[in-house]
Length: 341
Image 1 (cartoon, rainbow, N blue to C red):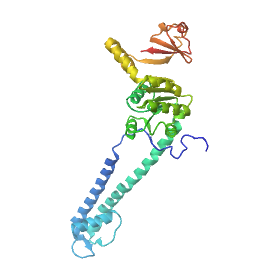
Image 2 (image 1 turned 180 degrees about the vertical axis):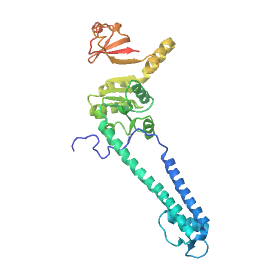
Image 3 (image 1 turned 90 degrees about the horizontal axis):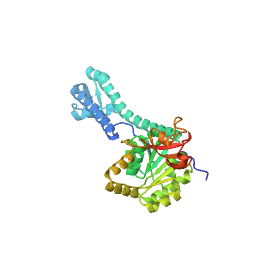
Image 4 (image 1 turned 180 degrees about the horizontal axis):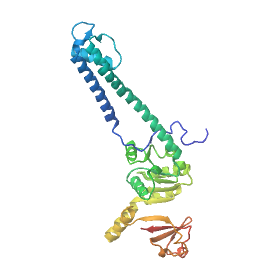
């Protein structure tokens, strides 16, 4: 078997949910069209009933309301058995100028609904193919629970576009929520290679691993690193003892949620103000924010203390230097700084 090429597998489109477009629920749209078709049928029945003396029933007898409804049904559906026919000039003129336009309207409603369904499927397939051709260097967020949603909110706050984020989760209702928020979602088990390929992970630049269970996080990280050796993988675990497993599995950064929450609780007990500041730093877009940015030309050759922002670390190559270290005393143009704004 040859190598897997994303987007060429027969199952490649299964489970991919594109961002939702604003429109009414499908049930409401179909229901409204059915009501409109029923209204046309009722109106035609009443027209025939009011002019019943101008019609001839081959079965004999006058035209009843049921006969009028029957004639309206077979006429609007273009069946036309011919057992009931208009013979008066008024009835024939009514058929020409009133019932015929109603028949056309009735057919437009029925055929239009079918065409719209087919058109929508074609449009969805076109959008999916277009997304596949453009998705590259994006961010894959695995798990759209509390941690995953917070990670997405932070990415959006830092300028990442919604089109550059793909969410993976095993629950369809969760992916539907992500689609309502304007994100592309993939329904499936992220420990499986085919699910991550559908999310375009081999071409991703960043991967956020945030499932509910630590063992799942380890398996997802292993699978993700196997598919993409260059992407930055950030994983979250509940327990400290599982952090080394995540690092050995290929995670570049491991965040321990339980111990981090515990440290924040302890800090808040000793100093509620310090705890509030830390919470502010962790909540992007409110008050103080921790960001990483490149060194400007004006800052190059100067001390981190001369920067307008408060520099807490300097990133030089793959090393992170504390601003107090001698190597970080003079900023270089190729450096990046982590600052508090």
